[in-house]
Length: 54
Image (cartoon, rainbow, N blue to C red; front, side, top):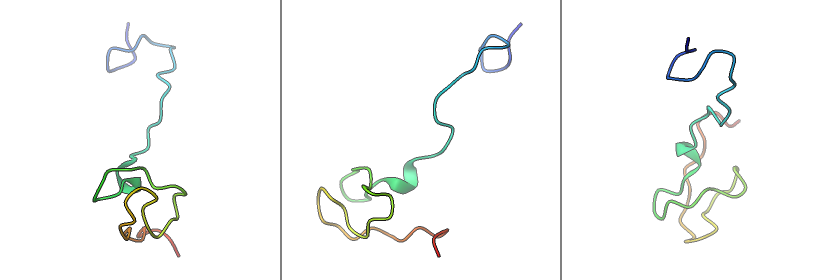
């Protein structure tokens, strides 16, 4: 029996379920470091502010 998506029942699929797309620089694709940065560490492009931030 499988627990869906071809994963055997009782086996933890692991991995990160969150979408990382919002953490990527739209110009060069680098992951934002730290996640609250205002500009890209690699290319210096201004990063959009996260809609969920205060």
